[in-house]
Length: 85
Image (cartoon, rainbow, N blue to C red):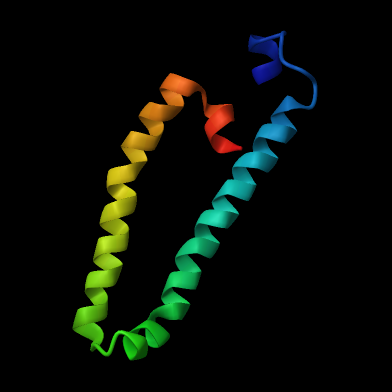
């Protein structure tokens, strides 16, 4: 158990960490869901077909993939708490 390894952590810390992590996952899933739901409207507004809208998905995924390590590096420099909140 974590409490056996590190006695300096507060009692409720594991529940706080679980809650914050779960909330972050929920927001990530909602983010992906809203993009999928918005695709038909985006196809109409951008006046494109399915092939054209796939570039939007690829660009979005590529941008998130590129920014993830950069965000991780900033978290190492400035601290994870400051960047998460």
